Length: 465
Image (tube, rainbow, N blue to C red; front, side, top):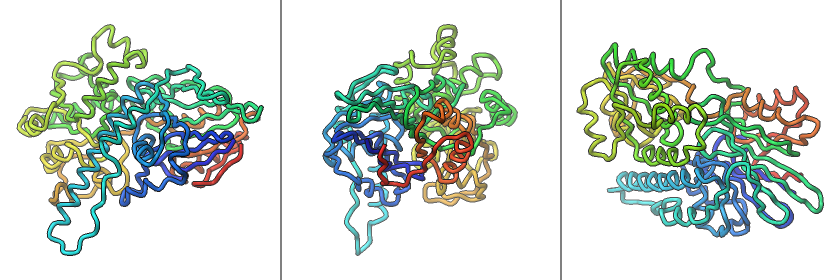
């Protein structure tokens, strides 16, 4: 049995791991590598023949895990994609959104190219809607904690890990030439007590563990709660200052956690009513997926539903349906909260709201997610006094705030705790992926100290298990 880490090796994005047992090849995740963003077509450079892969196992829907599946299919993969039911539905939404992003970037490049005498060949989108539909047809869904026999020698079980609706660790039991072996891939590990989502379930004992390490060496704030941060921010921005609060939020997962938290606050009377706009078509569609799979939400959310109704609906909450409605928000002069995507401010309707409000002294922008270097969100959090929005340099007069309490990633203690569910004398090796090198090393040091054998793999190196 061989393991090769082809993506998210000593970096965060582009998760892609190849597990080979005999002649059978299993690909775990197939994500977009955002560190290739300036040259996205390099995501076509698979280090193996896509047609040689027998099956794909998808841990969850986020694009850094699912986003290159249509490329894999376009280039010859012809097998099944195994995942949980919510992962299949959310992946379809996210992959369609990726096509829109590709096409938008292509149109933007075309505008910049006009009038140039020497033009390079036009860069084509990585994939189109047709390729996404081809991908959706390959999904085969499996419930949590239900062993599924892939073939005579390989059994797969999905274990819930929080992080996102449908997210799972993939646990394999394998007959390798008469010897039983086991290996688990954590995908992305969630945190405890996160809005809407269940806590991660413990993993069964395995021989090998491939673990994410995004928050290695980092810890979430523990001196306050999500509700308290929101109450304090809304009270100042919308009630005392009679202004508006803009919250950039990823459409799938983060927006639902935020809306549910606001529902609890307003339904409990902790604040007077404030108009709330959710301005993201993708968030609207994904919220319906959350409603459909209501049985997978945590017990608190289900109790809320039984006593107070829909977790994602309350008085003064309005889901914006179209661009016309979105544009009309700028003419709403009462205090309000605007939730919109994208979370890092790179495109999407959020840019229109920023354009209209970044120079408003009575506007607060609350960041509830990670912003990668180079993004508009990163520059605002860095404190740049002037930023570039929609081809215009604009002074930043709005108040900029942030909280890490909405991060759906487990922190250092959560990650190390997941590994420590395994006995160090029985776990043969831990492979750390999906993290910056410094985070990986800090997590590795903590595990080494407790007797675990840890490997920080290099991309493309084959490990014989």
